[in-house]
Image 1 (cartoon, rainbow, N blue to C red):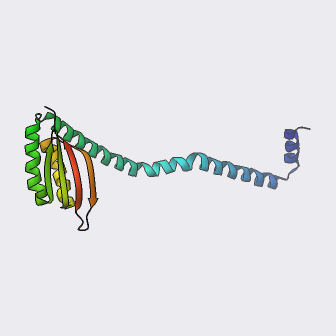
Image 2 (image 1 turned 180 degrees about the horizontal axis):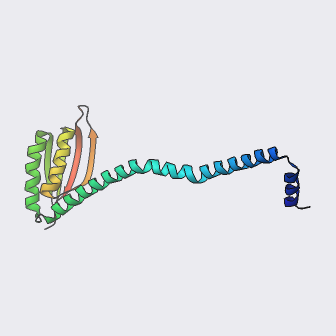
Length: 160
């Protein structure tokens, strides 16, 4: 006797009430499986979609802002090393004051910081990037006891 015929025989041997209960139990198991495998994951994705959409919109906005900054920087005329050095020197005097010293060696400018306030350094880096069009090539900073930054920044001047 095969397994199907055995099950069919047992099914026929059950009372109507037992068949109803077994059918209900099987239906409940099928519904639970359907919920866990199909509906619950879809609902979880649906619940998380709105916060993810907001986060992606914010990220896209930041990326577009950065893209605009890049376009603005690219549209500015190129600076020679002399103009860039003057812009760096001026920005160091304005933003960092006496907490920074400048030394020039060829096409590299080394800025030595002593107790420079973090806000002043952040503002100066932004100004140096925009006005002098230089970026740090080497940075060695430590947090001083007063909360300011100590160390050196090496900047590469634009090529001639």
